[in-house]
Length: 135
Image 1 (cartoon, rainbow, N blue to C red):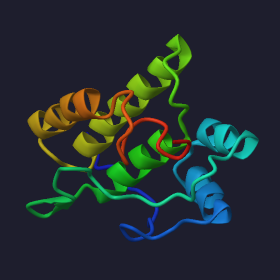
Image 2 (image 1 turned 135 degrees about the horizontal axis):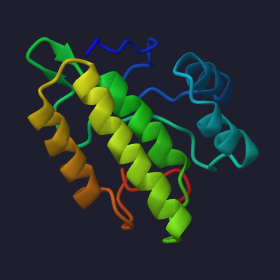
Image 3 (image 1 turned 30 degrees about the horizontal axis):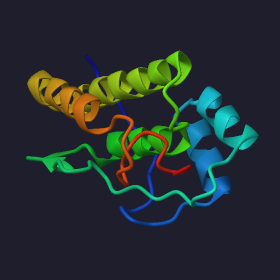
Image 4 (image 1 turned 180 degrees about the vertical axis):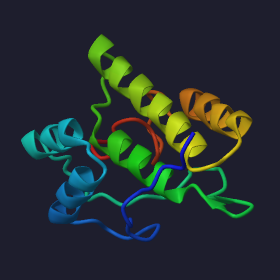
């Protein structure tokens, strides 16, 4: 499998403008995510805390870009437990797993991260929970 490349992402903790979010969604080929955000932007500004409660770098592999886009998806979600939102969250978590593995991390690490976000990112009011931009 070829190593996936990501656009340059803002530093951990930096607030990201809507123009930059649009540009990053275009660069990562996430038009559906941008349409969702543009149609109903979350009231809280977006910033990424990186790989919440996990490492942003594993040996010489920087997985922060994968976590940045995962955070963007979580920020834009709706903290209601509808079947559609549960599916959106599941897709975001699965995409994180694939992105982490594509960046070169071991599949075991990627799967461990998937299980971690499935367990810890659920419908609770934590700063990294699904829909945190709307809480």
